[in-house]
Image 1 (cartoon, helix red, strand yellow):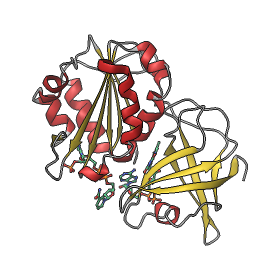
Image 2 (tube, helix red, strand yellow):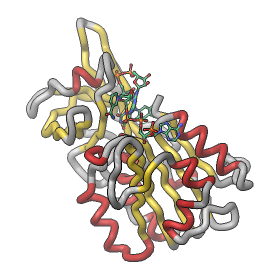
Image 3 (spheres, rainbow, N blue to C red):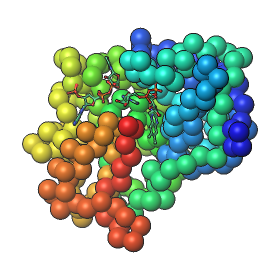
Length: 246
Ligand SMILES: Cc1cc2nc3c(=O)[nH]c(=O)nc-3n(C[C@H](O)[C@H](O)[C@H](O)COP(=O)(O)OP(=O)(O)OC[C@H]3O[C@@H](n4cnc5c(N)ncnc54)[C@H](O)[C@@H]3O)c2cc1C
Ligand SMILES: NC(=O)c1ccc[n+]([C@@H]2O[C@H](COP(=O)([O-])OP(=O)(O)OC[C@H]3O[C@@H](n4cnc5c(N)ncnc54)[C@H](OP(=O)(O)O)[C@@H]3O)[C@@H](O)[C@H]2O)c1
């Protein structure tokens, strides 16, 4: 089918029982950090295809996709059977508007992710643009259990930016020293997140990117709207840029 390329699996990294990174070599078209491609396989003669964000920066290879197996999920349960040398189809062209080009300037860039939606934020932070455009950047990653705080080496590399970068993990379903408990919207509402970082989450200072679980995206957006923030639209710039994973 037009648009599909055959990619070669170079690594399937297993982080936990359910979390994996699939690394693929394929001659894809240039893309913007934060965009997604599609992974696809033929199962019983039918094409199964799903969108996945790039974790790698546009100039980085291999392509890196971070996924969780969902119970009975048709594609993810197939992806975990792949080995180096196997093929997986990808699209030549990436898609999506969860990119920094869609985000107006501001003082502080807040990036909120649940689970595997950490990926597009890492791709963006590996590029120069966010560091050129924002004085301070806060990456917030919310997971259920501590072992799901993955890609720590990648995140540690951003610490070269010193006090300009903060990483705030949330672990919701077990005690985890060093991580905040509970959920992102509650920590915004109570002021805990601003106290913890010492940074404002206000319309005059902040731009906010939110990606992952659609309930988290909705609940976080609602709390921010209560603070006078608006959705960022091309014709009417605001403060909130979002992407739902399902
Ligand atoms: C724009 C976009 C980008 C995406 N990027 C990624 C990505 O980088 N990594 C990734 O793991 N998934 C990503 N997804 C979700 C992905 O496309 C698949 O839906 C997912 O991997 C499950 O595929 P499946 O065929 O196994 O099950 P599906 O039939 O597609 O999904 C079954 C159910 O699983 C749940 N679910 C799906 N994806 C997730 C998820 N990531 N975390 C928690 N629950 C989920 C939902 O309840 C969904 O209805 C993205 C989705 C969109 C729309
Ligand atoms: N991770 C696992 O061990 C596990 C186990 C069984 C099944 N699954 C399935 O795997 C898929 C992915 O799970 P996941 O753990 O990566 O993603 P997830 O369910 O989206 O959870 C990630 C984080 O988002 C939080 N969250 C959920 N709803 C929220 C909301 N409305 N507002 C703010 N925060 C919210 C969760 O907090 P809470 O903990 O408070 O919900 C958790 O900290 C799901 O389909 C799930 O059913 C996962």
